[in-house]
Structures are given as structure tokens and as C-alpha cells.
Image 1: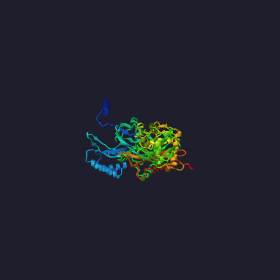
Image 2: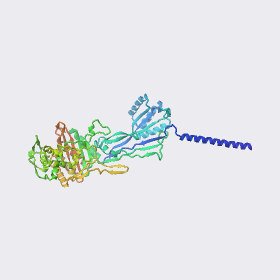
Image 3: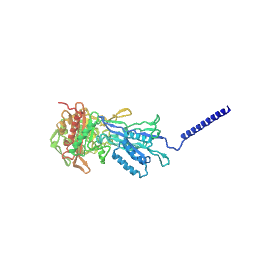
Image 4: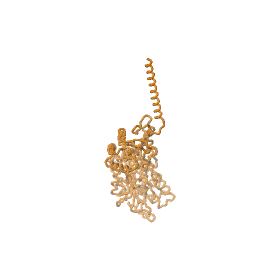
Length: 595
């Protein structure tokens, strides 16, 4: 009995001692695991890149967008040479790379194996879909023990698998060279926080709306790593939410834009000009429906000719020639220095101006004031300009925002130049009346002519309509200039004269059955350092085309056409203008009135 009692005590004592030992082991292991030790950090930061916003046309085509690009890299010490071929085959299947790309990787691998840099980049142009597949491959290979352990530079044993790292935001232009140069382009810069290359605007709409298009905040994720090196997600993992750039909606119709681009490129095969610029603006709103140039480029693959990257419509200043005449004409009309229907002495088409003789192509002893514009008489315009003081003629041009920015939403717009009214000599005022001695831009002239088709109201041309961000749409109206600068009566009188110029005068080639068309030609020599070269001209045509419901202001500039006799606006700019009208009819923007 005493022996049994002693055995029970011994058993209890043994159980107590063993419990105490297990308790001490548990406490010591807990202290060891939770104490600060010199072990690899189990926490990881990861960024999900916020993207630059899209640019979307009026007919809902996305013409610029961004996507993530990833790179795949591996530590060469992690792969057994006997398994290298298998690894590369699996990598090709999961990445979708072709045989040529894989041959290039193998060639680089051979060279890398001879060096001491173990970190090898397999590819750095991997899209998000392939990146997802490769991450799944990396996880499977890691779990199956495919990658071998090695001693790192600190003599610690570690295993590194295949790493898929986001490293670049790629800007994609789906319309290729269409909409250029107005759409502009971007360049990449390194984001210091995420170490990812981002895009910033350099030219065109990309530059002007850069603050809006630029992403605001990357998503930052923090947490413990699993055995594959991926973050274990929980409620506290996301530190910052991703905020993408805005989606910018523009007034340009891509289908119309492409049709006009194709037409002017075809025309230029014959004209052989330095450039043809054409634009269509909705007269009542200033919305640019098309801004086309023959000097286009692929924003993703720009060439060496940097001048092509400039938007000539706003950056190229030139002497406009006869397209300036309506603005001086209406200034005299507005100030009571000229009356409609009165006779102007045009001196049989010849006039001595200093040491030069001015000749009109349409020669007459006298013309009515309207005919001076209809037949583009330089001599008649000289007579009209002489009725105005220097201050009146320069102020009259400034009212139409010449020598000022038009207000269009593009960067680097030039103001042009007007002479100083206090230093303007009589001969300079005379040549000013038919478009020499000043500099304008294409967009200034387009906005100026729009006044005649918009009831005397100046409205700044605008390319972008609205933007969408964070679930909200914002209309872009606050920066649009809208100003009544001409009486409705005066604008109607000028509109009628420009219509008569097409119906009876120098611009008959623009006539279109069932459409109200008005406009004015302009031809001017190009000034160079040594003076005017007789072989270099700019040809212009600005005007409008209206139907019962719609009104459009249209401009065309043909820079230095080299085809014989094509420097005359009637032989170059005018046919292009007519081509634009025909396209507007074909695309349903204009509906001819059936007589």
C-alpha cells in the first residue's frame, strides 16, 4: 500500500517536472522568436502604380492610354545548370515570348555566366497579363523546391526565385500618327518613391493638361511575406489607395480627323508643300472638331526632325497676305470711314508704291467697296487703309486678338507681331492693308474669321471638352474666352461679302451646292534674312460652311508649295478647303439644302 502511494507521488512529480520543462521551452522559444535578432526582414513594401489618364475623342475612341510594364529577373545562383533549359522553356510558355526573343535571352545568359553579376534580367517589356502568369509560375517552382539555396555575400543561406517587378508606365498611342502634332507626347522620368518610370507631358494636349492627366498617388501595400516572397494581404495591408490621372475628353472626331488627314496628304503628293494645315471649328462654341497636318509623327517612335514635333497652327508665325483684308475692311466700316456700295478708285489695276508698282490681278478703274474684297484688290485696300489713322488700323487688328494668344488649350502658342502704330510709315501701312509687315498664326486667323460666322462674338478655339476623375465629370469652360467684339449688323455684312467672294469673286472653286460657303484667299511671299524670295510662298484660305442647322469655320494653310503656279491660293489652299467641305458632307456634319 505504501509502495503504491510512493509510485503515485513519483509519477505526479515526474509529470510536474516535465510540464515545467515544456513551459520553460515554450517561454524561451517565444522570447527567442519575438526578440530583435539579425534575421532577414519579414515585412515587404509593394507599389501598385497609378496610371496616367486616357485621352478620348468625341466619337469615343481612346487615342492615348497607359499600361504597366514589368520586368522578370532571377538570381543565376538559384538555378541548377541541369534545370536551366527546363526553366527557359517554362518561362517562354508563361511569358508568351517568341523564339527570336528567347534566343536573345540565351545569348545574354551565356555572356552573363562569365561575369560576377548574378542578378539577370530576362525581359523588361512584360505586360500585366503575362506578369500574372509568370508570378504563378514563380510560386509553383518555389513550392516544388525548383530553385536551389546558395550563400549570399553575407554568408547567409537563402533561396531566390523568379521575381516579377513592375518598373515602367508605358504610354500607348492607338491612333499612331493621327492627331499629331496636336496630341503631343510624353517622356519618362523616375518616380523616387516607387522607383517606377512614369510619363510626363512634353508637347501638345499631353503637356497642356499634364496636371490633370498625371496620376496623383500610387497604391502602397505593406505586410508580411509568405514563403514565395509575396505579401500576405489583410485589412491593414493597404497603406495608400491608388488615384489614377483624369480621363480627358476632346472635341475632335477621330473619323473626321483621319479623313481630313488622308485628304491633305493626298493633295500634298501633288503640291509638294512643306506642310498643309487644316482645321474645322464649330462656330458657335469654338470647339475644334479637327486640327490636321501633313507633318505627323508616331508619338511612341519620334524621329530626329524635331521641327515636326511643333504644332505649326500655333507656333508658326507668318505674314498672312490677303486673308488679313477683311479685318482692316471691317475696321473702316465700323469707324464710319467706309460705306458699302461706295466706289473706290483702283487706278486700272496699277499703282506706284515707292519704287514698286502694285498690280491687281482683276484690273478695273473703279470698284465698289464690296468688290475690293471680292476680287482681292490690293490697290483698293491701300485706299481704304489710308482713311484710317495708324492707331485705328492697329487697334482694329488688336480687337480680333492679333498679337495676342487666341486662348486655345495648347502650350507654346505664339502671339504673332503687329507694328508699332507710332512708328508706322505710310508705305508700311499700305502693305499692311494686304497682309505684309505683320505676323499672325493659323489659329489667330481661324478665330478671327469665326467672328464673322458667329454674330460678332469672338470665342477662343478649344480642343478639350471635359475630364473625368474620381467619379466626377468637370466641364472645361472657365478658360474659354467669349467676347462680343463686332456688332451683329457688321458681322452679317462681312459674312455676306465673304459669301459673295465665293459666289462671284476669286473663290468660286469653293462653291458647294446646297451649302452656304464664304471665305477669302491669301497668298504671301515668305520673308527670309536676305529679303523675299520669289520662289517661296504661303497660301491660305479661311472661311465658313453652313447648312440649316450647323455652322463651321474652316481654315487651310499651305506652306511653300513647290508645284509650279501652286503658290496661288486658288490653286492650292482653295481646293483643300473644298475637300474639307466635301468630307463634312460625307461624314454627315453638313446636310446640303435640296433646291
